[in-house]
Image (cartoon, rainbow, N blue to C red; front, top):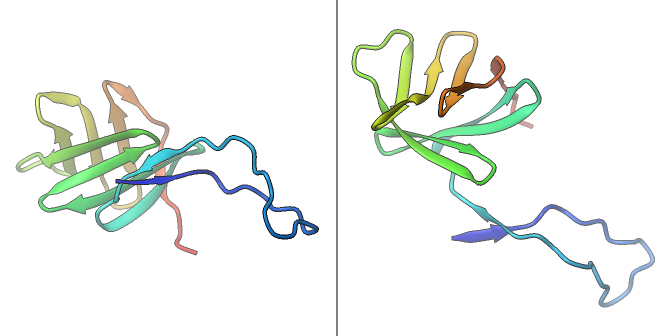
Length: 111
């Protein structure tokens, strides 16, 4: 597992070593293949494929979802917890975690 921290500014006059203070490390989980960042009403989540599953990453929450057979639009849900799902439509994505539906999600264009 890889651990990351938020970027910290380095003063332009700093030479050699400098004290960045306390840094909060958070686990970085690989988002999977064909990963996309979504903006869900200001909240950023990532979805990507890991094998046949869709991985949903929202901060420290990482959930692998299974395809729901014959679902239209395409839907992936957590095994045993159908209230956690990602539904992919033509122009938008619907995300729900434990029954809490996120605001409308749209893809964030890559930089």
